[in-house]
Length: 471
Ligand SMILES: [Zn+2]
Image 1 (cartoon, protein in one colour):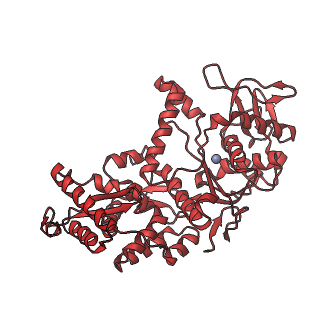
Image 2 (cartoon, helix red, strand yellow):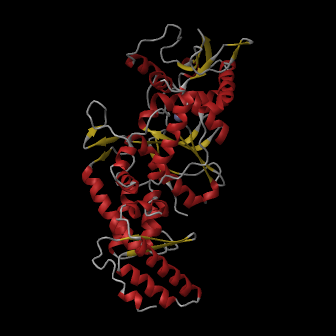
Image 3 (cartoon, protein in one colour):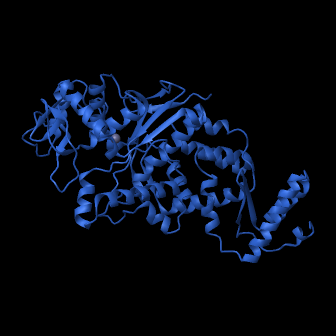
């Protein structure tokens, strides 16, 4: 098996990846807060960690990887959206959760093995907070429970490489008077009657009262419940490194009495648009759905993302999208009706195993395509989630709608080809495939059957002569 090396933010170096339990490789990635459509930047970690998930499944077996990505469905931004729109919170979170799954599915992202919603894990959060209080790592103040960073002062800040004193010196925010240390962060906060709330942790024998969890404790509690006290990989965008991941580590290590939460911490760099930071004020802010609605195939978005290494800023440009679309159109034509090779290119595997070097893997895909190795291209591209069956419909959908008569003829020849295969007349079956390809109908076989797409660049579209000779 290829040795996988990953850059660990915690140690600031590439390390050989050795799972705690190779029978169950465990990965947690921070998921979205569900109150709006995912913008393009939100999709980058989803695609990056989807490739890592595919690589781990390839290396350890699909049944030996557990990938958890949460939905944050209790948050002040959600409450604000509900108040502003007059809609119930549950409607907003249910709708935006569904949007997220649809949009990420359009990018070819596999669904994680578990997608816990924060509101389903409130008892686990409350229990963890009570453990932290009992251990002297948290305290109650004015209806809040806060994590006491002084109780873990020498270790807090290690991931992002800051000391508590530096952080305090750099802090420009107004500090709540009930905090013992300005860096103390909220584990639990009080809720008024119009906001979501649950019975809070018990402090000194009585409940602190109705409230809701802080954001950071959600991930610690859900990761513990689904992956255990220690697991292999924790991922997210590098904007989450501080304070979110720092706080997750502090909570989890103190509550679980462990030295680490995850062995490897991975962070993707941010996304830019045409060389500029994406922001509403610059007018270059758009969602994944905006692009899909403009007719940009999800596979093109994925391809552009993977053309840049995940630890470098990714610049989304229209030029890159056009180029990716031309490449994929060519590759889709090359692999139509072809079965993937039984093994993946060693060069592609080596590139991915080297800290997920998707850019280098894509160069190798180009080489495979230009050498005409369609089966090798297909098998290797699929490890990156490209040229998959799930995404082929984008290229089908954009074809002009063929007439019913045309479709009936294609169906007739697909059926004829299946009969030839069944009769072991592979020569005729191949002639039918070539005959269809000649008129621009590209076949694609899968266990579910054969699908087809039209190649409009083919000038002989609709010339059935070759096929009619096979009747
Ligand atoms: Zn998180």
